[in-house]
Image (cartoon, rainbow, N blue to C red; front, top):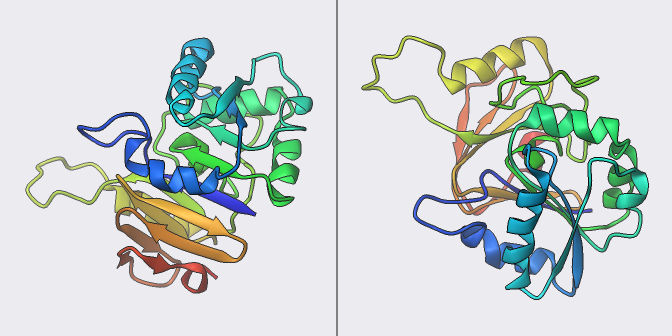
Length: 230
């Protein structure tokens, strides 16, 4: 199993996927075409066109998945990219298209998987640690469960100078751990997880690790997280 799970698809001041493209090229080495799942945004055609144009620069053809697709859409794919947007909408559309089981089986069998933001969220057991607003109601929160921990993309540290009195991201994730057993990786902007078999490596930027019964811990790349997460 080979995954590349990005916190974000665009860094401030950079182009789409540019900050992670060296790692993406490694993930997709030898890949001539990939299947793109655009369901996290409303305009799936425009989203697919954007991704197609970006990967054309890498010599990779992109086939977008339509809203009327079924499991066969990923059955013969060389690789898959699940893009960012709203995680609740992404999961519901994948449930409606019955894509989750077939996609999980293909990835577990070795098909390379690239996720960004919402596409990273659904690689976890559930989407319960997404930052997104539930603009639609999925059938369940269970996701692909490709890894045995939760992910919080776009993790933001509390600003000590802020006068905002609402919960910080850290407080929200600690609340998650009060009710759920899975550890959580808070991925800061510019960071990603490279999963290769049992190995889980943090690259690009730092992360904050949350585990039940322990104080949160900052981790800096390059770092192997598999032992910490299990």
